[in-house]
Image: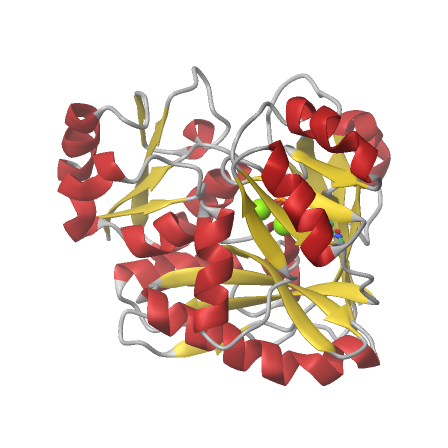
Length: 347
Ligand code: ATP
Ligand code: MG
Ligand code: MG
């Protein structure tokens, strides 16, 4: 037993809190919003800004270990609670900055898409020269669910795209003609041991994950060993403890890293029903210093579909489907593009 602190109160924090309970842990959520959905299932809730150092110190003092479910947090305020933080600030600092992340990925022996750091429209024009078109431009920080991204298809649009993305530092990436997408979801224990989940085939729509499914198909299956070696090296170099996800593009000539999430991941939600130990229970085990659980499949066939925006309105039919495991996040009124729940089918 003991108390686990979770910084961030979204659905990932909610599912972490639900997984902590059977292991005997109480959960304390820290989030600036009024009624985050994780707080509804937690024993305690602190409402404060992520950069409120005094509030963070009081919160950490009430917890045995502190984790985060969201990577777009200011790193510096966490310095005083670093001793209790798992994973640590290195994982956070790298994963929240797309340029630092790509350089780190290269240093770990993996390949990102060809990229350039962008500080202004002239850098975009230079990136077009160097990398060609189309380019994918992403805000260097704060993006998620495809927000803060634009495709540049013509050099005439450089100024417009720079303005559309708010005149902020960006990364320019070569547009990848991938065959498929997959992710490596792994856990690294406090003792450095690694456990890998099966890699699903992930389908995105408008930058948002639509579906994750197993079997993932031959192309992905043929790239998973290499991707696992890379993801394991990334976790080790970060000194990461907990679940870590590396998103990949499966290309004809091998896997390319898209990005790193230093946390449980939407493409691992299927593990709640589809694996012996869910990614959420696994993360709790890792940060609490418990042995990692089995990642074995309960079924070779699994599909997880997100319920985005008003798709949540179909919940009564899904609740009536005996083959569907329905998860509603309790977020209130649906908004377009917002993840409201998911449904998993196994077998
Ligand atoms: P997440 O919610 O996963 O953190 P994000 O906002 O960080 O999302 P990315 O993962 O960078 O977004 O991109 C979202 C999706 O957009 C990718 O999964 C992929 O389908 C597409 N995409 C991103 N970058 C590229 C690229 N360089 N070439 C082709 N498609 C891309
Ligand atoms: Mg991302
Ligand atoms: Mg992504």
